Image (cartoon, rainbow, N blue to C red; front, side, top):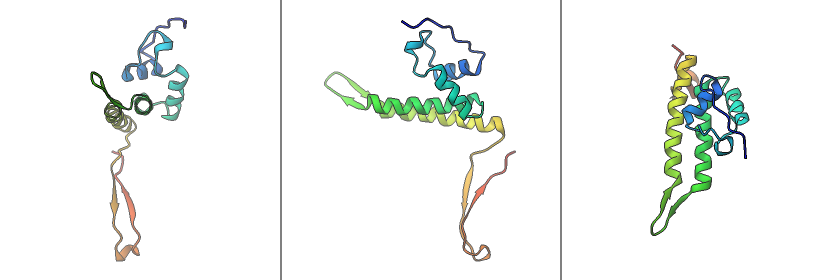
Amino acid sequence: MAELEPIDYETPLGMVRLYTTDTSEDPAARLLTDDQIRGLLTAAGGSVYGATARALRLIATSEVLVSKKIRTQDLQTDGPAVAAELRAQAKAYDDLAAAETGEHSFAGYVPPTPDRGYEAEELRWPAW
């Protein structure tokens, strides 16, 4: 059996665990390993919110792959619905990460016009 390890919620790793509710004191019962969360933190440039969003998406993918949608006489599970909620939570953490860095995810499409030579372009809002 894995040794019980307390989670330090004052560290970035512990904060990601807290935000994803992956807080079992027993490492074997956790959804993500410490190494996986460290990798997510690296991929998110050290942003706890960004890593949390990525972790929630990983958990959502796992939920869809494992749980699927099952309906029997006395049991019903809906992995895709759970995954959709996890992805919605991930989007909220993406927004927090963007606010943290001053980036905004607003984007638009500028249609082609004669004065631009009929070339479309992407419009990005400036960071405030």
